Length: 374
Image (tube, rainbow, N blue to C red):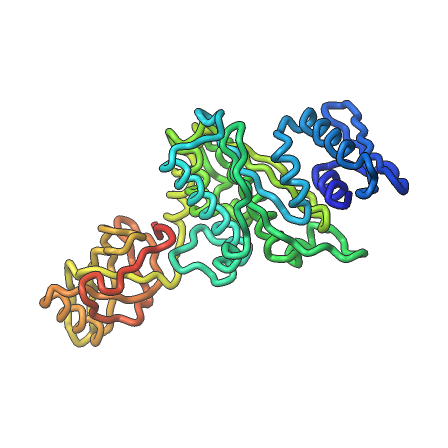
């Protein structure tokens, strides 16, 4: 009974009255009031039958399977994010390659929201905050649903103590798992609004402002991947907050159609072009050296070989000692590596404040990254 009550409250039902053996809940849908009577005695002889009748009623109201409803009732102590992909997926089945992409893009979507919860930026580079990576280890995929292809993400949250206010101003004090869900909900809605603006005016004047709502290049790319051609006709994101911890007013649903794919990719590119990526590691061969006097250092151009920018040329200003190392690496056909702040300048990429400059074996330090930097 407690799980049923929590589920109904989390999906918008209002408690009308409660007695020893039953409770009545109310909701208004499309201007029509609906009232459900729920058994409050789990030990009653007819409890199983009454619960079955309740699930049947909810099926008619929510247009979902009994299996999905029961699963969500059992998960009422968790925040649930549901990603529904539509298209040629009516049987609930999906080709393996597309399924792998869907799971990967969902993971990237969650990671983008976790990073934005910690620090709002236009792009997040390969090195993600430890707290964001820890979040991915705690949050869980629930069983998939049929009727299309539905991924569910479940995140347990602690209950809110009596007297705590569900005030939007206190969102920063929410548990991290809840805060990430709220960030994802608000950033997805903001991204949808920017897509609509671009579709109507061919301008994205609110794109930069969306960064403070959690819109990032990483988020846009993950959303684009879920509605890529051949993947799905639309993506519906739905959020259900645990009734054990009432959420501040926040979006509950947002949809992206397949025709938003190119706009989302364009938004991702624009955000990367306006970004400075901190702590970015460049790895690759030196293609060009230029110096008026070796004693004062010089500038080199490196072909980046990492997954984040393979084949791109980056310009790096160096001091005398590092420039001599670069000259040595160039003559020996060896790769170099260093870390700095990567930014786009007209016609090229530039790494400023280089540090940790060293010569490495070909590909010796090459590791797979979480995503591209630009």
